[in-house]
Length: 130
Image (cartoon, rainbow, N blue to C red; front, side):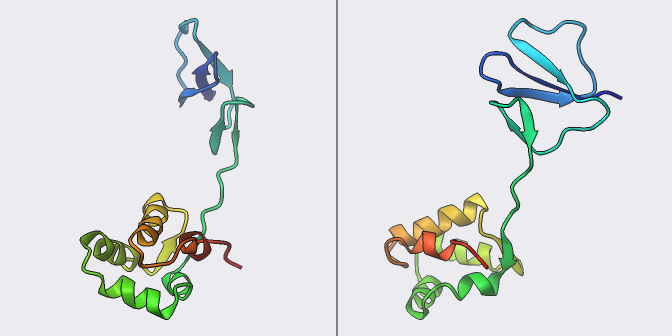
């Protein structure tokens, strides 16, 4: 079966991927034939192709929590703010954490806004892992 990506001719926005192509497409849409290979990855509206999916940065929670200073960990753990408590629960619900997950990224930014961690610390905490 042949795979197709249907995208907006003007702008390249991906609209659909599949193996069934209508007999006629609306004038504003274009179909790209990928042959027998199912396209995977992230659609690039400039190249009109799929780029490799970025590798997620998933680590044991202990590696992340050790990036907090002792006073930051204590403030985080003992906060009475319900949103901070919820973030603590979400972070420790699993053995590993995806530091690129939008909820974790937003949560670390929130800790900074709440003063639980210092200015610029959210970026340092989720920064490069060796």
